[in-house]
Length: 247
Ligand code: PGA
Figure (cartoon, protein in one colour):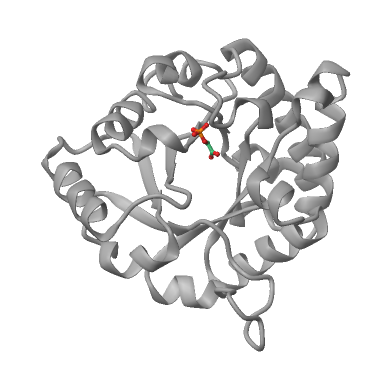
């Protein structure tokens, strides 16, 4: 499977920093055997468009509804109109800070698919859940409910243990790989044979220094990168090793 590396800028950046990123990215060598995606804050989507070489565009969220009186929301069709091919849904920050349930995440993934985008559906356990050794059950429960309305060809799964996001504590390659194997088994149960083609990417403090060992794991198909994606050079370095060792 071709590596997939997605930049999640969260609520960072300015018009000037976005222009700098585009400029720096376009000076870096083209990458082979990897798909790259940038998910900036919505206001910067239009100015990025297709200006970054080889980089697809994605939203960080989308509404579950198609249109109407939903102040502050952005529909999947609006993202598509700006050139987005991906939408992150169910990021742990959306789940914990904005109360998004699995049912809401499922509806968002469905609405992204109807509009023609790939939904990057995020799952992951908290530190408490891992310490209680409930992480596999928690993640399988999230998958079963969050993907309830999805077709295999419309989704990417991002495993992001909450305790590894923005903390500098990456899951070890063994921890990540073993959870990815559990996720693959669950996807095969939910989607049958087509579950084998769903990319499963890892997120949580991925950096240039740890990306290669993560990508060498059998079950890791790429990365969702937060902090380290804000710098064009460091995102390029991560993406440049995503094709390594993949079959
Ligand atoms: P991080 O964020 O790389 O800064 O840990 C990842 C994410 O939240 O998608």
